[in-house]
Length: 110
Image (cartoon, rainbow, N blue to C red; front, top):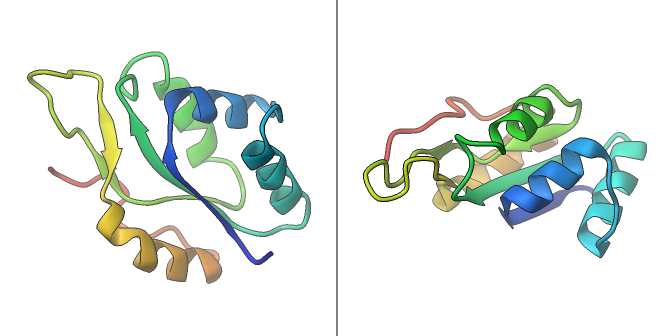
């Protein structure tokens, strides 16, 4: 396998991935790709991205071979901590990840 796209990636999966937990097949596959120096792409979709999941996002943003589909604060009034990827940018994010580059900007306005 050349890469793994975890989309949508929940806050729970973000936390487990950041902590190195591998209790699901998706997280086990991510661990295998990290071990083989291959890219893991994350399409975040969580109501807690600006809450407790922010720590996990920070860890993963600085983790080698981890790339994010650009994301933003989708509903600041009704869901003040929510972050969601711009999934229409998945293909460009994958292309950049295959070149070992993070698509920019990673933070997008909704």
